[in-house]
Length: 229
Image (cartoon, rainbow, N blue to C red; front, top):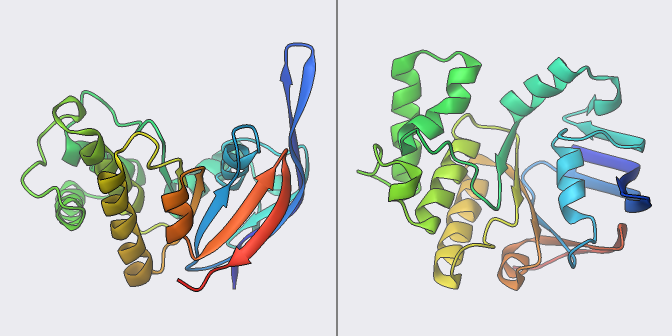
């Protein structure tokens, strides 16, 4: 079953007087439970593609379906609800709220969903334990290492059991050992929870871990391979 379907997706941006075609007729089907990396050099369109799949930006033409729902017919509030309940985001810069503790950052999505306090706290503690941050619940982002902050970001992305996690260059600011630990953790959660992980990356380690590798160049899909790892 396809959880994501992109059909002839096009997106252009205006940079001053120049029009940059970020995506050109990209078609892609992603099944539930995949562990997939979208790779390519800077400017290839990989982050743009993730933003389109996440409903963070509108495409110019073509179609995107997530869980059989068409983005084109959705209002902004419907898109916001889709992101809140079905899609988790992990950003290169972590995007944690600096004044909140680790556990409060993880709880934030569930707060928006309206879950009661005791349920939020219980789920947040459990997921922080799962990502190796037991005992660090009350530390703010500035009191955590880069790897620990990214683990909080992953915990926040998956705590509400989304269908999809979109991870934009999640290892870019991490050393190789920390990055490998993070990928192992996400691969385990993919296997246990059947959450679909979609990465954008130019990190060869992420490409090695991915079970499917999609390559973009100049906004076009140029390669799509299933791996045997």
